Length: 464
Image 1 (cartoon, rainbow, N blue to C red):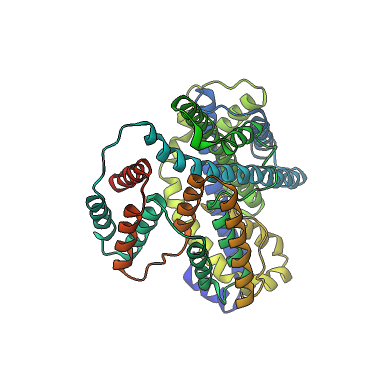
Image 2 (cartoon, rainbow, N blue to C red):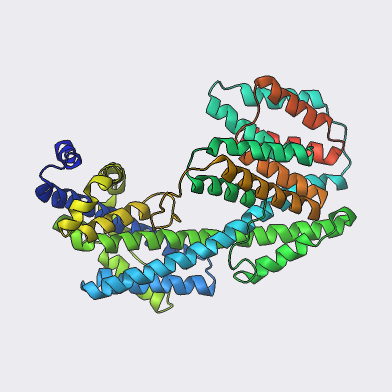
C-alpha cells in the first residue's frame, strides 16, 4: 500500500480518489487470500473425512453441507447479488451456532483438565512409592525457572510451576490473591475486568454456557458420573474405570473441538471471500478462478454424500505455492492500516457511498485474524473501572470460587486452586519468594503420591 496515499487519507486529503483506491486494494488482497485459504483448507478437511481421520457427528455434517451449498451456488456458480446477501446471512448464523458449541466444548475442556490433574496425582496411591528428596526436586525446579534472564520466560515458567506443584493455601490467602489481581484493571475498560473474571471462572471449571447440559449429552453424562464419584473410596479397579472414562470422553471432546474449529475456519474464510467479491479487481478473480474445479468436485461430493478420495486433486493447488505466505504479510499490513485510518474515514466513506464497502472490510479484518471466534459486532467502551466496580467483581468472584470449594472433593479443590493461580498475574515480589513457595509447597505436602505425581508432571514440562 502506497505510504503517501495512506498519509493523505489520515490527513483527509484527496479522499474521493484515495478511498476507492485503498478500499479496492484491500478487497483484492482479502479476496485472493480468503479464496485461496478456503480452497486449501476445504480440500484438506475433505480429505481428512474421506480417509477416515475425521468423523463428523450428524449436526456437524449438516453444517459442512451448508458450506458446500454456499460454495457451489456463490463461488463456483454465476454471481448473484441477492444470493450472496442470503449466503452471508446463513454463514453468520452458522458462525454463531459453531461459536455456541465451542463455548460448551471449551467449558468441558476446562472442567476435565481439573479431573485430569486430580487423577494424575491419585493414580500413584495404588503403587509402592519410595520417599522423595524434596530439596533436590526444589533445586531442579528453581534452576529451570531462573536459568533464563528474560522476564517473560521466567514468568511463564512460574505459571507452569503454579499449575503443577502441590497447593496448600487457606481460603483467606487465596481470596486475597484473587482480589489483588484486580488492581491491574483499575482505570481500564470495564469489559476488560469482566473478561478477566470470565478467564478465572473458566480455569476453575465454573463456567456453564447456554447448552451445557443438552448440546452434548454423552459428555454431560460423563461429567455427571465423574462429579458424583467418591474419589476417596475407590479400589484400583474402580479407579481405573473412572480413569478410562475420562480418557475416552477427553478423546471425544478433542475430536469434536477439532471438527468444529475446522468448520469455523471454513466459515470465516468463505464469509470473508463473499464479502469482498463485489469490491475486488479482475486480478482476484483470475487468481481464484483456477480453484473452481476442485471446489465444485468437493462440494458435489459432500452434498451427494459420496465423499471419496479425489483423484489428481493436488494439481489444482500447484499455482498456489508461496502465494499465501506473500499475501499474509500484505494482509497484515492492510489490517493495521485499516484499524489506523478507520476512525478518520467513517464519515467521509458514508458520504461517498462507500459505507457498505468499509463495513465489509472491517468485518473481514475480524474474520481473517487468527482468533476465529471473535464477535463480529464492535464492542463499545463501557467506561473505566472504578474502585467500587472492581471490589464488587472480586467479591462476587471469591464467593463463587469459595462456594465451589465447599462443595467439591478436596483433591478437586487443589486442581482448581492450581488452575486459578496459574491464571493470575505473577504475585511473587522477588526470586526468594518463588524459592520459598516451591520449597514450602513440597514440604507442606504430606501426600506422597500427590507430591511425586506433581514433581513428575513438572519435570515433563521442563523436559518438553
